[in-house]
Amino acid sequence: MNINEYLNKKVISKSWLPGFGVFEREVRRFFAVPAQTILAPVGSSIIYFALFGLSIGKMLSTGHNSILTHGYNYITFLIPGIMAMEIINAGIQNPMSSIMISKWTGTIVDMLMAPLTPFAMWFAFVCGAIIRSLIVGIAVYFSGSLCSGTFIFFNPIPLVAAIILATGIFGSLGIAAGAICKSWEQIGIILSFIIQPLVFFSGVFFSFNSFPEWIQFIRFLNPIFYIVCMFRYSMLGVSDTTPLISFGVSSIFLIISSVIAIQVLKSGFGLRS
Amino acid sequence: MNNNSISIELKNVTKNYKMPKGEHFQALKPLNLTIKSGECFALLGHNGAGKTTIISLLAGVNKPTTGDVFINGLSVTNNSEKTKRMIGVVQQELIADSFFNLPTMLSIQSKLSGVKPDKNWINFLLEKLQLLEHSKKTTRELSGGMKRRMMIARSLVHKPQILILDEPTAGVDIQLRQSMWKFIEELHQNGLTIILTTHYLQEAEDFCSRIAIMKNGEIVTLKENKELLSLGGKHRVSCLIEVPNVKQWIETNSKYLKENSIIFESVKNVSSSTGDLKISINYEQGEMSSFLTSSRKLSEISNKLHLRISEIFTESPGLEEVYMKINDGNIKI
Image 1 (cartoon, each protein chain N blue to C red):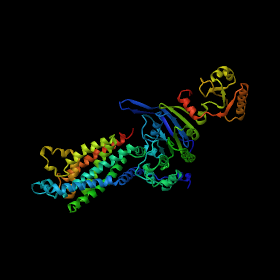
Image 2 (image 1 turned 180 degrees about the vertical axis):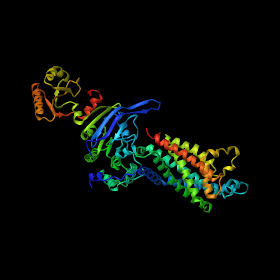
Image 3 (image 1 turned 90 degrees about the horizontal axis):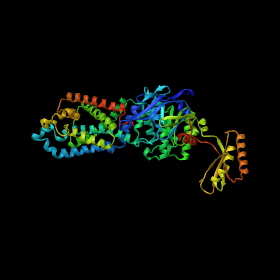
Image 4 (image 1 turned 135 degrees about the horizontal axis):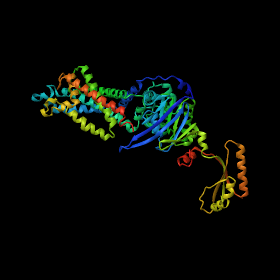
């Protein structure tokens, strides 16, 4: 075929393709660096299981202290919490680092020149983050189960809902942060001084009920608390609050974070020079 | 494609940018521009003249502050999803995701542009741009010249109707540049509208039918290629002569030379005791009789003044000369 024949050949154009292009790019990107995106969180979760589970865990899950773990063996109690934590980390880091790299290398222009609506772009980034979170979550589940020696049977519907809500909330925040932040230092500040404290005050490592009364109000401001509750309920049948409240509050957080992310993408703030 | 239809239209477009201290910088002053389908159009100007701003408005990356941009009759502001599919941009910077090999990168690029990837077309582009043998390499493994060609492949993968080339051959060696232009010429012959910005003015002169020169956010000149070149002055037949004292020689002979329409200029330091002098006479381009008459006259004058000619040659005004004169304000449009 010559150039004329190629140019005259009808192109197949679909409105969903640009969004799918972003999604494919996201998934291929994190698969291209698996040591960083998949193995690293699994490695760190194994360290948590080994360090906390096999040493101080024995003290935490016996006698008077069993209130901290709702009466469960500590590693078993830890698995949903660590899964939630790593899924949240993967969810926020996937779009955040992708957008930052794109801004750094200039490939963000590809996204801005693509016939994409802000909603489609948001949806594609969040779906990419969900795939990475699912892979990380499954790997953490198996490594935790191997460390504890037992496989937890879980209720898949609330667990899938929890994964989608967790990645949706933090993927959206990752999109907004990736667009707004001007340097990797600012990204580091968000991860170290906002996300990490929220994780530690969410009940990942022990029941939030064990905190003093005066600090209990933090749980109401912390979306990670409700996500951890959903993970723990779907896997162990226990949690610090009812599943309905966790689902409802997380949904509100998802709506707020999605609106923020879509508005940031729409305005082009931090993306267009 | 109808060659009389309008491909691109800018109507009263301005673009202001907010500066860090809250001030506004006007990158584009009120601008009207029409480019026909199938035209090869050059947009020239110094850095910061507003060329890239126009490209970003056409590509839908930025929105105009006032006015509107139309691509094939569709407003970029109101139909950006449709107009973006019609445009391919070869960006100035060599940018691409470094994670993927060429076919994967092109396939994703096609999807991003809303078009189902055509494997045969991708292979055709890679072959045409001499990249097929490097298709297993990731973009970070490509040389600078290969990346330039990759940028062209990226911009064409969704078969756009308009191709914008923002300094497409910067840093490319002559051989590759020629093969790239051959391919671009082929695309143009097949109906693609081409907009070129370049600092290699010869490329604009050789390939574009109309040329716009921008300065400080406005188009100061917009003319047909030949018309613009004619602003640079007439074609000349010139000769180099050696004289013992240029300054003194000019003082003695200037009246006589002016009476005979001879243009003279020193090509070495005037203050030196000996030096070369260039004397020239204009002739009408394309008219052999005019050329012969001018050459004969120059020869007669040289004989009469007992001049020793070291070199004889013809001179044509190039776009570079015209561009410099317009930018320096030596040509009033």
